[in-house]
Amino acid sequence: MKKPLLFLLIYSFIGTSYSQSVDNIPSLGDASSGSISLSGEYQLGRLWLSLFRSSVDEYDDPITKSYIQDFMYRLSETSEVRDRRYEFVTIEDPSINAFAAPGGIIGINKGMFLKTDSEGEFASVMAHELAHLSQRHYARSQNQSSPLANALILLGSVAAAVASSNPQAIYLGPALIQQLSINFTRSNEKEADRIGFNNLVKAGFDPSSQSKMFQKLQKKYRGLNDEAYSYLMSHPLPKERVTDARIRERSLPKKNIYKDSLEFYLVKSRAEVSEVKDLEALKNQYKQNISRSKNKNIITSSSYGLSLALKEQKQFSEAFEVARQLVQKNPFNLILQTNILEIHLASENSFEAVSLGENLLSINTGNYAISYYLAKAYLLNNEPTKAEKILLKMSEDNPEDPSIWYILAEAQGLSGNILGLHRSRAEFFILTGRYDAAVFQLREALKLSQNFFEIRESIISKLEDIFETKRALKNTP
Image 1 (cartoon, helix red, strand yellow):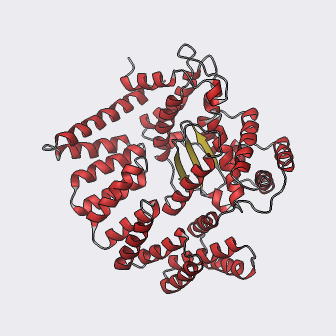
Image 2 (cartoon, rainbow, N blue to C red):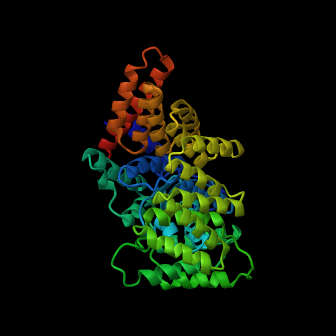
Image 3 (tube, rainbow, N blue to C red):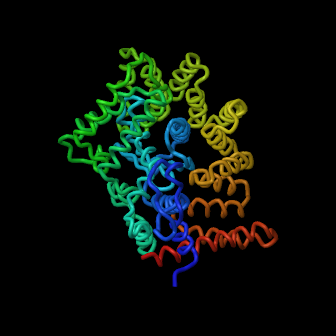
C-alpha cells in the first residue's frame, strides 16, 4: 500500500484548476479527469528542486541573487503570472540556459550574464520563461487521459536518485531538465515568445531585444560542437520564430530610451570575474572598455570589474582606490557601496567591515546582500551571536534558501548553540535533497531538546515529514 505522503501528493495533483476566465487558458478539468492543480504544481516543483539542488553546483553570489529576485519580481508586474511564489536557482554553468519548472521554479545559468550584452536581451529570455509559467504549459501538456502518470514520471526520476544513492540520476543535462519541467511543443514556444514579447515591451525594454537574442543564439551556435549555447537544445529556434519576433518589433513605434540598468552590467562583471582564468587579460579588457567605450554603464561596470579583479589578486589598496572613486561618482548605488564592504572582508579588516555593514544595513533595512556580508563580518570579528541574529531573520524571510541555513549553522556552532546548529544543518540538507543527512542532524538535535517541549515536537514533526517523503519516493512507480 502506498504511504500517506504519496497519497497526499497524488491528491494535490488532482483538482479543479482556476477557470478559463481567471487563467485565460483552457480548463484543466476536475478530480475525475485527473488534471494537475496549481497547488499540485507547486508541491511537485519544490520536491523536484530539492533533488535538483543535490546534483548541481549553484552560483551562490548574494549580489547576483538579490538582482535576480528584484528583477524578476519587477518583470512579473507586467506579466500574466498569477501565482508569484517563485524560487530562483542560479547554476554555476557558463553556457546560456534558463528553464521554468512547475510551481514557479526558475533556473538561470551563470552564462545568461556572461553571454548577453544588454539587460533587454536578458529580459527577453526571462520574459519567455515567465510566459511558460503564466500559461501553465506543464499542466496543459499533460495527456488528458493520464496526467497523473506523467507527473509521477517526474517523481520517479527523483525516486531513482534516492534509491540508487546517486543524485546525478536526475541530472542528465539541460534538455532533460526542460523535458522534466515542461513538455515543450512548437506551439508552446511560439506562445511563450508572443506573451513574453508583450511582457518585455510593457516592462519598458527594447522590443528588438528578443530578435537580437534569437540572432545571437543562432549565429554563435552554428558550427559549435560543445554545449556553450545549450538553451537551443531545449528551445529550438526555427526560422519562423525569428521572423515572428522581427515582425512584432517592427509593428511598434521606436523610442529613444529603453530600460537598461547599471545593475545588470555590474552583475555581469561579477560573473566574468568569477569565471575567468586569466585575470590579467580581463583587467586589460576592462581598461580598454574604460578608455574607449561611450556607454556609461559599460564604463562604470568595467571599473567595477577591475576592482573585483584586483580584490581577487589581493591587491587591496588598488581595489579600494577604484571602488571609492566609483562610489564618489555613483553615491546612491548599493552594489558599488557594498563593494567596499566586500573588499574589507577579503582583506580581513573586520572592524571596518562591521562598521560599514552596520551603517549600510541601517539605511537599507533587510537588504539580502548587505545582511549576508554583515553576518560574515561579524563572524570575522568573532561576534557569532550577532551573526546568528541577522541570519535567523534572513532564514525567516528566505526559508527555502540553502545558503542561509548553511552559514547560520556555522554561526550557531561558533556561538555555542549546538541545538540550533543541528536544526539549521537539517534544513540545509532537506533543501538540497539529502534526507539521510537531515535525519542524522535532527536526531542529534532531538537528544539536546529534552527540556524544550515545543522544539522537540517540531523536530519530531520534521522527522516524520522526511520519513514520509522517503517512503513515498521509494514507492513511486
